[in-house]
Image 1: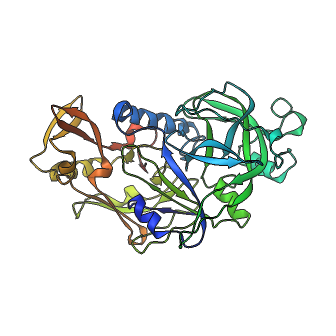
Image 2: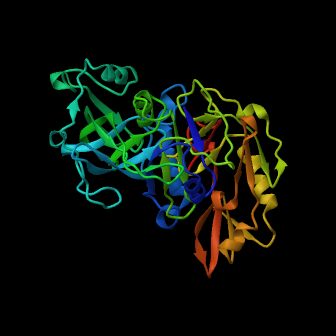
Length: 409
């Protein structure tokens, strides 16, 4: 599977269009980057909880089922179609929604919208999946299903999933129609499309997660299911906006733009690994040992939409941060408090021109420029001055991830 990473503004992706008609979902961000959630230590804690459950699993894997909650989309399921909120995560493989009846399900979603429960009896195209179904067999082999009397009465294909926030969800698998809604083509044409997909029907839940639309690499993810039916190429594209409210767009297909560059994903890895080669700050290549970028089960570079900040591996973080500090304009005031360096500027827009550009170089010569608007986190203001910190964090913040670089949202 390839993943197209659009690092340009959202308007560029929309103007370019897809190479062929492709379903698209609008992404919205549940957690703002500023205000109470803008405290970078809270963001670090969120990422730490998401990632730290993997330390007992041997080979590196971003999470048992990730820790969603950053981006969500609206999808329609069943016939007649009804709309549900699901959270988008490239670190998760399973699709599931809360079902009726449901034990522990709140009446409203995390973003304070009424919670709609999927009822398979209300859909004319819904069918339950038995343990003898080959799709259940695939789920069992991947560790995403259970088939025993206590968990799945009447030979029903069930599941129990545990998330990094400590929440769990239990239910059974069903097959029904997923309505993909708006479809974009090069000429801006709009169509409706639908597909029959396997997803989880959760009838017991703890934790905040409302539902998941997983875009991981396994055969159970949405993109894999659509591709196996010949309804979509095995590729998706997503572009995240830079505004404090976040959001963006997700296209089930490839987006073509003359200005885009690409780099191959690393094969034989469970997540979206890239081969990073080097890093430069304001065009000056940094003296980082290339072996620190090599990919293995214990190290490498991963792209993950569910991680908030970006984490640089041990041996990579210090050279990058030191180079950024050295390149910041002397007109920017700075101070250190509790080990954190703060930058103060009288004007946010002007401040962006006073910080350097970081360039990440990947296999096949692909270069991703990360400007200060992408790596600075605004912490607030004081006496009409804006206060910033560097959003890059040490991977040592995440237990047993010291040698892994994670490029977050």
